[in-house]
Amino acid sequence: MRWRSFVAVGDSFTEGMDDAYPDGSYRGWADLVATRLAAEAGPDFRYANLAIRGRLFPNVVAEQVPAALAMKPDLISFAAGGNDVLRRNFDPDVFVPRFDAVIGRLRSGGSDVVLFRFADVMARLPGQRLVAPRVTLLNRAVGEVAERHGAILVDLYADEAYLNPMLWSTDRLHLSAAGHRRVAAQVLTALGVGCEEEWLMVPPHPTPTPWLAARGADLRWAGRHLAPWIKRRLTGRSSGDFVTAKRPVLGPVDAG
Image (cartoon, rainbow, N blue to C red; front, top):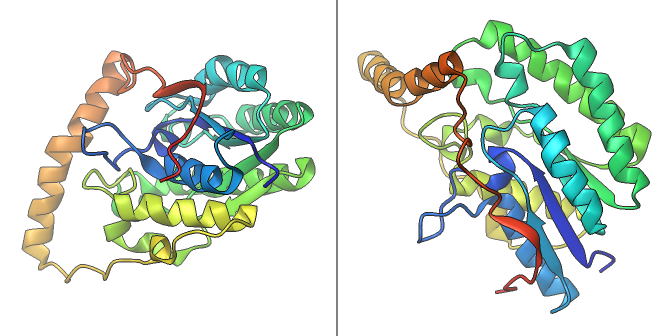
């Protein structure tokens, strides 16, 4: 094991929504990866998770990247930009060079860096015509940046299993527990580390819903999840306004 420390950087995807521990806090793929790496590396392994839900790319770069670099970890995961592509003012001509620059900074510190092509989440969300091309552009840029800087690429977009709604939570935007387990397995595979085979298992697709019942489910989803999201956008608020990083400093991990 060449990795004795791991720092996870990003937004809700890396914080672990919606994969809850019994106490209601979030676990997610990064905690699962850290647990497996700790089992391989032994008691000296250290892990920090700086990710906070709702964070935009500039906030991640300004708040989390300096902290991650200061820790000088062997391994950093970086996943940001997903919230940005949902904003009306997203500018790829500005975003892509900044993304390239920050990955260059992370790599220049000597850390191995894990990057992600995001899974196709837009199939069941409104705004697909506007957002889907942005996601395609972002994923293409991630691949190019990973190759340019020698980062480790985890290509979730190429995995059709994520078209299964059972890998997503009821808000249709965040991964379910099964989704997080699958991501963890793919990260560990990219790192050349083994994992539990059941982490890759995909639940059966749900039974097709009659049209009328499906529209009712859409309306309930809009009231519970879409409307609050729109309200936050209109009021300039974020779901992570009063949230702090769950593991702000490097610390030991229970290897299970």
